[in-house]
Amino acid sequence: MSDAKTVLDIRDLFVEAVSPRGDVTDIVRGVSLQVKRGEVLGLVGESGAGKSTIGLAALGYFKPGCRASGGAITFAGEPVLTGPEAGRRKLRGVKAAYVAQSAAASFNPAKRLMDQVVEAAVSRGDMSRAEAEKRAVELFRALRLPEPDAFGRKYPHQVSGGQLQRAMTAMALMCDPDLIVFDEPTTALDVTTQVEVLLAMKQAIRERGVSALYISHDLAVVAQIADRVAVLRYGEVVEEASVDRMLESPQHPYTRTLWAVRKLSGGAHPSKGRLLEVSGIDASYGAFKVLHEVGFSIEKGQTVALVGESGSGKSTLGRVIAGLLKPDAGTVMLCGEPLPAEAGKRSREMLRRVQLIYQSADTALNPRQRVRKIVGRPLTFYHGLHGAKKNARIVELLKMVELDESFLDRMPAQMSGGQKQRVAIARALAAEPELIICDEITSALDQVVQAGILKMLDELQARLGVSYLFVTHDLEIVKAISDRVIVMNAGRIVEQGSRPDVIDRPAQDYTRRLLAAVPEMAIGWLDRLVAQKNDDRASLRSRNIVSIR
Image (cartoon, rainbow, N blue to C red; front, side, top):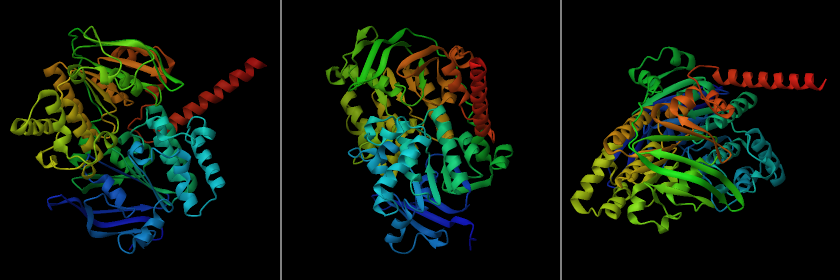
């Protein structure tokens, strides 16, 4: 029996997945977890370990094809898995809230953000529309969203991925829930925004006494917000302990592996000649100008990392190069040949040579197609493969991204976020491109799989000579894979150069601020960073007062 201080009590939970053919697979195997009032439990583990499944089960929800096959869950002493669905609906969004991994796939694109953020609070009668909108604006401001008074009038496609993730966090906080399930809530955020959001979450937990189940593959982030950590592998808890004990002395061999893979290292790749040259690119969304005179180059067989805060124009630049957004000015040259500004005007061979892997696999994969068709289509379109040769190549591509043949007939809804992203990578590799634009492609992956994907991309680069434009906010990845680094701010390139020059000897204050915001594997790092910022602000105010006097 759980005591009165226990908000969430999961006992011996089993969850199974049923394939279209009727095959049954256990994806959660006898998991027991408890979350006390005001406590944050971090849940970490590799992709497919069952983290998100457990988080959804805490709210009495299961993905299509999944079901609880044993165990019990209670929320504040009340059973979650048994009883009518109406009782679970009263729980969700009010007493317990969920912040999804992919905000882009969770918002309705046809409705304004304000309508969606306040919907649960208003429809359940907890607040009037006016009260809910006032509360939403307060949360927008606390989460450092731009123009908080007007932010809610925008549609999801009019804001960046990081801004959309913060809007979902505001939605979760609307009704002051007792428990929030955070499912990789900062994966889409740049490092400086991540610090602000983590701080807002931490303050909400402290001030309101809210409990949280924090699912993440970023151990440095978990160390800043969690009190205890449970490590999952193959649907089982292999280790559970306080954060300080877990960081200082992990016991299980798998846990020690998780702690070690954060330190990646990569070597420089020799240049084999110029592949891509971007000159004088201006781009806009309607009347809003996003890119300003952007210019850089990529060498054959090398990796250029494109970093910057959310909304700085990184993904927009990738879309311009891929021909998905027509620039207002400027040119894109591939091996000295100008690329038409629009993808529809490019030849099939031009399309094959430049591939784009999107940030959100949830929205990039057709939810009605099986993996076999998703990965197989470019094999037919670009290479004319059919029948046995095509099927053999699909299996080969899946193995490259650490997926076996059992995934061939799965639908996207039957896979974890990391598994879906690996399918998206396999689809891009199927074209055998010369340049792959990787738009935050590892943000949904745990660190073990992330290390494997990065190693795989590096090996492909060495073998095939493929080049990468790697859009990322993870500076650990930048250190591991890049030959050159481009730093963007407000649609402009503020610094670019070799990896050692930019990372080890940054010339610009903005770059130094980005590097300072990378979470460290140390308890209290976030608090110390905030304290340092407050001291800097106080010092600045003091100097201003002195100068005025």
